[in-house]
Length: 204
Image 1 (cartoon, rainbow, N blue to C red):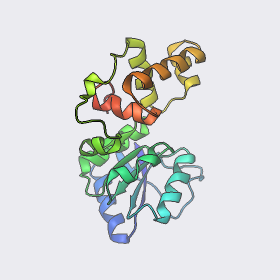
Image 2: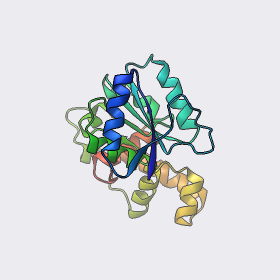
Image 3: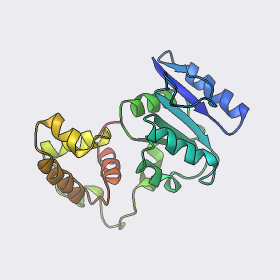
């Protein structure tokens, strides 16, 4: 059972989100949002509904992520405004009108270590390319090992953890990560994961 803490901008919004969470037998509501995540029994995931980037909840959400929780943001503004937070530990960014099945899937994926964004927002989360450049023409094909590394990157693992998983050296992992980013034309690990999702190399 995944324990979910809800943080919302109003009591009405909180009640609506709690009803979505309760719709899944795999999820349960954790303690009141006023309680500290450092309690003996912290939640597995935190769902945060935010009005804007200037909301105090942004800072709280980053603190939650730093504390080890899988944080799912539900936002009212375009995803492009929130992409940087994915690089800072936030696991998912979805529109505030998310459905119960979508929220459940996002929570389960985030708890599993994946990065989740709404399919309709993928294009906005990735820097624009020339209209004459088709995605598949931008890069070389990834090797089997590079795909393995990319998928472990999508799980949020660092180089040392990836090295242990694949039984290779950390230096070799750094080489593969650099190669993956180069072939995908990515400027960061997060962008590489997003491009991998877009090309079907990473399943969310």
